[in-house]
Every structure is written in structure tokens, then in C-alpha cells.
Amino acid sequence: MAQPKRTGEATGTSRRDFMKTSAVAAGAALASVPVFSVQAQETKRSFKAVLIGCGGRGNGAAANHLEAVKYLNDKLGWQLDVEFIATADWFQGRAEGAGKRYGVPTERCFSGGDCYKKALEVGPDIVVMAQPPVFRPLHFEAAIKAGKHVFFEKPSAVDPPGVRRVIEAGELAKQKGLCVVAGTQRRHSEGYNRKAMEIKEGAYGRVMAGRVAWNMGRIFTNTPVNPTGPDQLVGPWQIWVEMSGDHICEQHVHNLDIANWYLDSHPISAGGFGFRARRVAGNMYDFFSIDLEYPGGAHVHSMCRQVADCWDWVGEDFTYEKSKPGDFKLEAADPYGDAGYHPNAYVAEHAHLLYAIVKGQQLNEARNVAWATGAAVLGRESAYSGKRITWAEMFDDPAKNPAVYNLQLRPTAEDFETGEIKLLKDGDIRIPGV
Ligand SMILES: NC(=O)c1ccc[n+]([C@@H]2O[C@H](COP(=O)([O-])OP(=O)(O)OC[C@H]3O[C@@H](n4cnc5c(N)ncnc54)[C@H](O)[C@@H]3O)[C@@H](O)[C@H]2O)c1
Image (cartoon, rainbow, N blue to C red; front, top):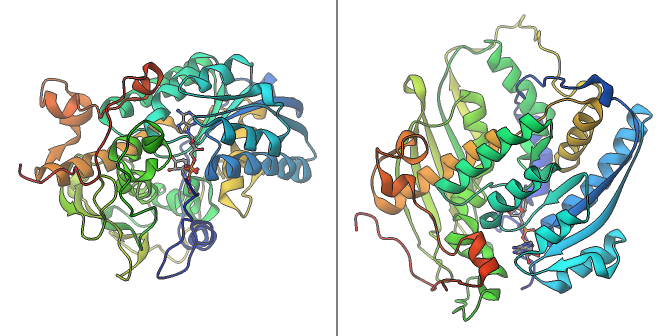
């Protein structure tokens, strides 16, 4: 499938351009980054990396990773070196395409449902993952069990069991002293971090309410696919709920992450609506409008739309208890120390990952991205069902609402390995209230 260009049709603003400008506009704080091993501070190091998922973002992430090495070496006088030693993709051609770009011999370019296992067996230190979201919990868990540091793209899952699996694997990573960074770049932008630190230190009092949005034009194919095999699910994965989690999960997760971060929580319930106005391909909605309730009575309006020629807005706004006092001075130290912030947040996230590994710090974003993904799945299911759903029902208490707690979308990642794949139908969408 041709690589979709992620460009806001009405504004002509690419995701990357958006990140550059929005990074200046807002802010955010990493929780404190504990040091687990000071002996790890050897700054002349060679790492081996593998790439799982060799599409647009995977190739971009690999390039960002190498750029981050250069950035740290130039900025801090370190002598790091990273070599990609394997690539893995569902499609052999894509694995080899990335292999050629990053100097990986053909015999270490793997394909098929178990390509991730083969890549892990090659013995990397670091795994860079940008496969479709349905595969992330399984591949992430495998990488952590194998003792690898991970950069993984967002969202982290498509359903509640997947979200919980990522949280559990993230906890295992902590026990093993592994670093985990997610592709929620705002967490690696200076502006977002500053704002989060200010909120944490009480500059604005409580966060009372907010609105977060990813409203843009249509992206991805809108020609029905009529799948006859797995390739038609894996290729245009972006249009299938079971593969992407719907666009509220796949794309709007970035903005939901900011709501969670600034409110220092996950939503406790969601109620909202959505449907498809213009989409005919796949089985996703094309708009959602969700009320998220946070602890303490704060509400956040979450909006997302992929419909051309409508009001576009991508961002996050919050209403605070008070204005920041003119003489406010931040006390907290920057969470990323002298690594600073590469101006391109896509590079900064890799720089922060490598910095934490070298410094022996425990940087672990698994829970953050899982919570943001959880907020998206909660909102999505409230719209699909027409019901208000609580976080506790979906993620915490198996007895409260077992149908919601155990909601596992099919095909699963494992199904793609066994070959027992339920084919999906264009237009087979959920009808609220039914
Ligand atoms: N952080 C961001 O700003 C950002 C931007 C774009 C995409 N993304 C995320 O990156 C991920 C990939 O998106 P993309 O735009 O690169 O999509 P893409 O379709 O270009 O690439 C995905 C690649 O994964 C491969 N793949 C499919 N199944 C696989 C499997 N089982 N094992 C290994 N590889 C498999 C596909 O064949 C494809 O080459 C998605 O989760 C997406 O949400 C993030």
C-alpha cells in the first residue's frame, strides 16, 4: 500500500510541523527519573538496535535514533555508536528496504507474523518498534522479557487487555532496569515539560477543565478494501479498528496524553458519541466527541475528526484555578538534565532514551502511554456503545463489567502468527445503543 501522507488537508500542516510549533506553545513534566545504577555512566558505548515495523514511521524512527546519537555526541562530547543489526516487517520487501537504508544484510531482514521473535534473537540492546498498534503489547512484552531497552510508537494497544499487558510489561521493565520511551513526542518537548512542571509546582492552582483535540481532514484510503487475506488488514491497517484502535486511539492519543499528564491522572469515566459521516472504507468512525471525567470533578472535552473541509484544530487547552503569578520561579530541575531538548521532538525522544540508558536512569513511559491509550479506548467504547463507562470497569475490576473488561478485538496479534485470522468487512461498524 502507498504510504499515507499524514497531512492536515485544510491547513497543509504536517504532524512534524505541528510538533515544532506546538512544542513552543505548551509544556510538561516527566515524573522524577530515579538513577538505578551509577556505574552505567560509561559514555563511550556501542549499542546494537533492531527495527520492528519498517514503514513510514519505522524508517523515520530509525533515522531519528541515529540523529540522536550524533546530537548527544556533539552536545556532551560522548562517543556513542548505534548499529542496526536486524529489521522485521510483515512484508519482506519492507524489511529489506529498511535493511538497505540502515546497512542490515538481507539474511537479517525478517518477515511474517513471527518476524519480531527473529529480530529479538539476533541479540540487540535496543528495540525500535513502529508496527501497527494491535501488535504492540505482544512485541513489547517479548522485548522486555528478552531484556531489551525499547522505543515504541504510540498508541500502545487497541483494547483493554492490551493496555493492561503493556502496563504489566512496563512494570517488568522497571524490575529489570530497562528504559522504555514512547512516541508521544510532546513528553520530550521543552515547552510541554516546562508547563507540566509549573502545574506540578502549583503555578496555576488546580486544573479545572480542558479541551483536547485532533481535528483534521481525511487521511488514509477511503476506497473499500474487501479483504480476502491478512495482507489487506496489515497493509491498510489504519482503517481497521482491530488493527489501529480507531483514530481516537491511533492519532488523538497524543492529546489525551497531555490531559492525563496535566491532570496527573487517567479519566475515571467517559461518555460520548461519534460515527462516520464520510468514511466508507474500513470499519472506523470518522469523528468522536467525548466527555472525560477526571478525579476531583474536572472534565475534559476530547474531540477528534478526520473529515475534509471542516474546522481543524489540533491542540490542548486548560482552564486553571488561577493565573501564574508574575514572580513565579520554577524550582524543579529539568528532568532530562544536560541532554536538553533537540528541537525536533522526534529526535529528542531517542536522545532521552539513550541518555537514560547511558546514565543508568530509569526512564519508563510504558504506563503513561498505556494510560493515554486507555483513555482513548474508554472514549471509543463509550461512543460505540452509547453508554457511559468507567475506568474501573474497563481496566481495574474484572467483576464490575466483564464484557468491557475482557473486550479483546479479533484478530489478535497472536492470530497473525497462527494464521487463524478473522477477516474484517468494510462498513461493519458499531451502532450506538444497539
Ligand atoms: N508519533 C507519531 O507522530 C507517529 C506518526 C506516524 C505514525 N505513528 C505510529 O507509528 C506506527 C506505524 O505507523 P506508520 O505510519 O509507520 O505505518 P506504516 O504502515 O507506514 O508502517 C507500519 C509497518 O509495520 C509493518 N507491520 C505490519 N504488521 C507487522 C508485524 N506483525 N510485525 C512487524 N511489522 C509489521 C507494516 O508492514 C508496515 O511496514 C503506528 O502505531 C502509528 O500510530 C506515530
